[in-house]
Length: 368
Image (cartoon, rainbow, N blue to C red; front, side, top):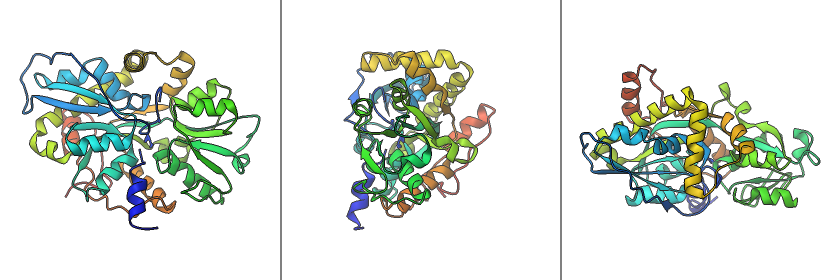
């Protein structure tokens, strides 16, 4: 593989979620950003070192920390007189470009675009400063055509995008079955069909695909169309946990406004605490924000099972990001990245300590 190809391929990586997707789109993959013209007035309180902090996230359930934090004003509350403004993205590369250009300062994003953003700037563009969500990715199939895992061979299975978080995970799973697929073309013992999550349910209904390895709520949309969950990706990971959404920040903003970064992290931690203590209210809040952004809410038969499969956590699950990068390298989609220094978890651990919570680990990939 040439040196140029991995960089091009990496730009497609996103959720996660990937990562990488959702009412909308998968975690990290779709169209350009959409700015939210927020008229919310900053909460009364002392202004921090910046007048405004510009926050990006994706309008999908794996970014529910940001959805709920925005909807309920929990992020703004911690920022006091510093105003939070929000932009929504359907593509990991678009959010990374916005961060690099200074259009946003902080973002929720999938692991693969975070790796991309760090690697393509020689470690100078961003830091991962916290976790947000784990899980929420499933292999859903047509039960009339695929009755067991071995039946996946010879079938047409969709992933959100070449090189995205779910694409890498599926290619790795295929290799572990002893099957072969050309990563670039998707041709081989399984036909890997790269399909935008917005149209995957229609592709499934038309019979042009036999299933999909996708994030929520796309997976639950397929189930609502008669699909069957054949495999939950969480079952492939230790403790059934793997990163699907991180929090990133531009290194310049982190250096210039550490108090603002810490306030956003404090808001994120308190939002996750509220989500986990009030799952039904949090689910409704996330869906209300989705309705505001997309024009319609997710129906209960999609929302409920999708929500149950996602774990909201402050831990970035750093060891699993390193593993996901290794899977991309193994698949031939990524040149071995240098990830040392991708994490700076000191601000988060300070917040966690103040909240009486345990610190999180950077798996040896933190700033020195």
